[in-house]
Amino acid sequence: MSYGFADLDFAEHRNRGAQPCQGKIGDFSSYIKFVESAGARVIPLIYNEPTHILFQRLDLVNGVLFTGGWCKSGLYYEVVERIFKEILERNDAGDHFPSYAIWLGFELILMIITKDRRILEPFNAADMASTLQFTKNFNLEGTVFQRFPPDLLKKLSTDCLAMQKHRVSLSI
Image (cartoon, rainbow, N blue to C red; front, top):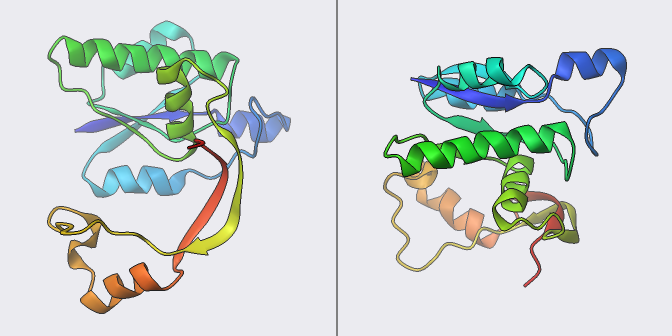
């Protein structure tokens, strides 16, 4: 199994000191390790490569991980939108092709799906800890929590152990 990793060209932007989007360019090695820990091989999908090369790479993978890039417009947004539309087309055609969007990648996909680049509003939850709220009769099987000791699960729901770093949110 191989997984595409929708990636900003971090080395290029670090060398030039440029940023294609608002926000900071970070180290996404933890996301790569996350995908590799599931047994997948990671292939970067670098947004500013020629389109034909990008889509050749997309043909080599079984899914795509969107990690981020806080962009409401520009080349990165357009490329992610094209990749996401391709994923939808493949799934509609019966080809199981998963996508997984984490943090800023989720925000970006949300804007693409809703066609509303202002759907997220400013929200101050940076450096705040909170509890996790488990639903009643929550089934732990098949989740990250299945191996947690009962005392840790209780602490997660009663003590402020979950770190929040949110700057935007959907308003309710």
